[in-house]
Image (cartoon, rainbow, N blue to C red):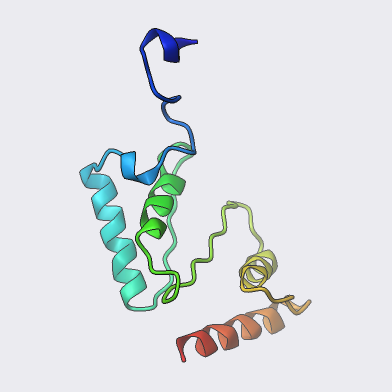
Length: 118
């Protein structure tokens, strides 16, 4: 309704906005820089913050620049993950069924990461 009144091409602030149309703020540039640092060094990165701050949008923007033949993104979005469900979610995104016990799943994930590094 307001989109036509203001002659907008699409609804603003939707999750589906193309990352090429995002406002390149200094904060977004800093986040992308930090994520690049982690990716170049094969490190894990964790982003935290209040709801609505743009964490998912920043990650979408970052992943659009990655070469999928060189990088594997594992994205978990849940603030209440138990350690067991953390490992389960990570392994599932790698296409694996997690071992039942947390310690076994942790070792399984470490093994898979080492195999990916080569």
